[in-house]
Length: 73
Image 1 (cartoon, helix red, strand yellow):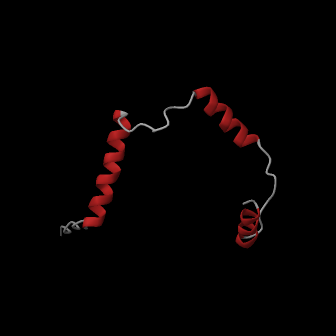
Image 2: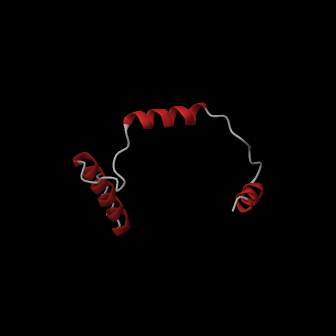
Image 3: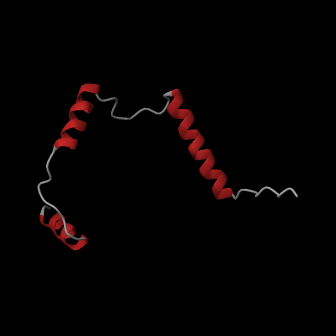
């Protein structure tokens, strides 16, 4: 017995089109960052620094995190 294929919803189709559009533009290099491209050396240095950096402090919960953000303003 053959199962009937599920008809996709409009929301599912819109999501699929969005994903495909993103893929096509990415492959065609049409979509360009408004700020331009960063130098590869800068990106490598930035990623290295981010991976090797030690945290300055650690937040125990959301309340502590939010209180520190409000103090820095």
